[in-house]
Amino acid sequence: MGFKRIRQGQKAIIVNRDGKITRLDGPKITFIILSKLEKLKPYVANENEYLIIKYIDGHVEHRKGPECIWHNRFEHDNIQVKDSFKLDDSQILVVYDRDQNTNEVNRRLVYGPCIFMPKSSEWIHQFSWHAEDPKQQGHLTPNSHKFEILNIKPDFFHYHVKEVRTLDDSLITVKLMVIYEIINVDLMLEKTQDPISDFINAICADVISMVSKMTLNEYINQSSSSLNDFKMYVQLRQRSERNGVRVKSIIYNGYTSSETLQEMQDSSIEQRTRMRINAEIDNQKNELANLRLNSEQKRFDLESDLEKLKLNFDQKCADLKLKYDLECEIIKNEYNLKISELEANSQIEIEDKLLHINEIYLENLKNLNVDLNKYQLELNKAKFKCDKLYEIV
Image 1: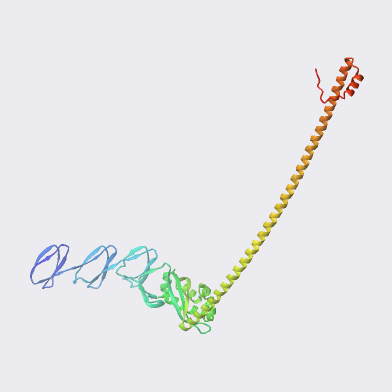
Image 2 (image 1 turned 180 degrees about the vertical axis):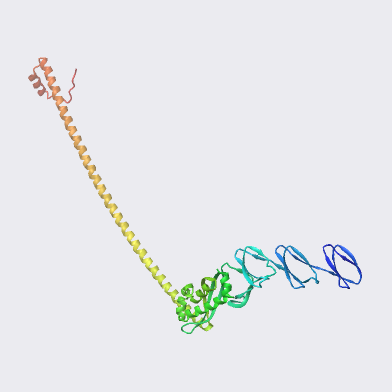
């Protein structure tokens, strides 16, 4: 009993003692006598959310945000705020819908990118697959990966096939990584509930079949080539083609064995490695010695070639010098011969001119009525000898 205040933005109901319900919107002040005031709780959904409203009569309604519903216990049994499904271009939702008239259930796929809100008559498929144990790599546990949004882009998982026995009764654990891609969702939904589980069984069968035919040493030498070849996994390829999920490749990540066997293998590997290293050291020493010998031989050959070139050069220089001296001597002789010829010719010309001058002189004396015989006798008596004769004109 008394005054009750309802603030702005609030809503409330008044329940009278006779069961009558009155709705009130704030802001408001009311006086209550023999009644009960109940403030309503709001449920708000934004643009990326929706409301699931369950009424007391049993029917359910979904309302897409933005929306606000005030919970009234006399109308609503329950109200929930849910996030809408946000899908990118590589994600799919599997949605089931029940026809209200025929009660028949239909399935459809919702592809991204989109924001999806299911109707009240629809529900989303819940996937439950094997997944890796975060505490133990390579160990897959069932029903540990539960999800509703299905990724169709390529994905991978690690799996360790444990206690695989070789032909010589050695137990090993084979480590693999499987890369797969969903290519047919409808076929996958029809053929399997957990494709990862199918892959695990097929991989175990194929690996055991391959390894059981090899000894441990053969496995060590051939494992990287055979276990990386997807064609060797017969069971896995058949499962992959049958359930709509394609295995793109398998990567072999090595193996482990028991501690005793691992110690023996480590010791054997250490010995083989030491022997290989020693062999490589010996080979390197031999190669170094051969390289030195080859270098010395090449150096000797180069020195011999250089000496031959030097001798040939000296011989050619001597030949050229001899040829040059001979040519010079020939030219000198020719030059001296020409000079001697010129001197002889000049002397003959001089003597001829002297004779001619003497003849002219004598002729002039004769013209002057000089007795040439007497003149000659006088000259002989005087033993006159004329070294130079000048012609006076």
